[in-house]
Length: 295
Image (cartoon, rainbow, N blue to C red; front, side, top):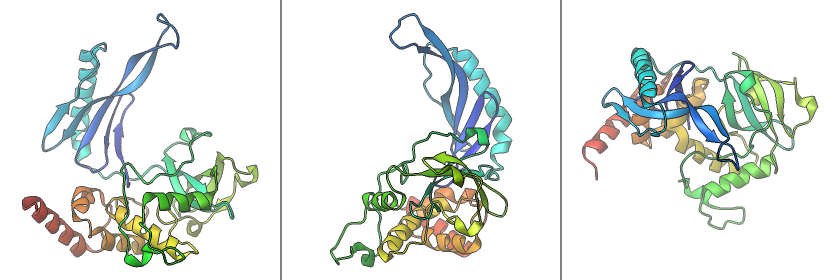
């Protein structure tokens, strides 16, 4: 679903997926009762959602648990927000999450789908769920009529289940995954992984061996290609926030994104580069007209 912008220090962080609305969080000691005991209280430091901030609406505070030091939390969060207000306007920030976890093709061990990315190697968990998912929403893909046919010519409604089945068939079950450290050229060196042959650690894959998008675009089966393209077309307004796209991929995504003008209006502030400004501007005009005159 694109990128998340993050500003953080040791005790606070601000998160945004559109560069407009920011969730302010602060880290605080939280009581965590030990299992099976009324007395064994363990203090853990966890992030608490403090509020939502935007330039247009200011800060909207969220309810805080009454058993916490509310004054201390408020002081930390307000000080942090005051410090970062000017920095927020600099979004989008350069991508730093160059360590990526990819599901592997069960036949050739090449990357198929991106399922995680981190900034530091010590954040690359050795045991992690390898289930691929479409995103945070229940969606059913709108695809061209030609893609609504299975191999027998029977009409089939394209859905998230079809895409999940395709990924599972390609990666196997349970799926295998490997962390890669990508360099500036796009090549990657293999690190540890889940359920992989130890010989794969240390291997080097060139830029062209990684998908350009978080899901592999090239498939031997025509129906699979159409289904994946429909998925990327649906995601296009969000994928355009990625910083490592080549110009051809970005141009194709811009053309697809314009069919969802409202999403482009939400996300365009985070586009690091635009190939066809006229296309994006046309989508923005359409979005504003639709918001002004909703049907």
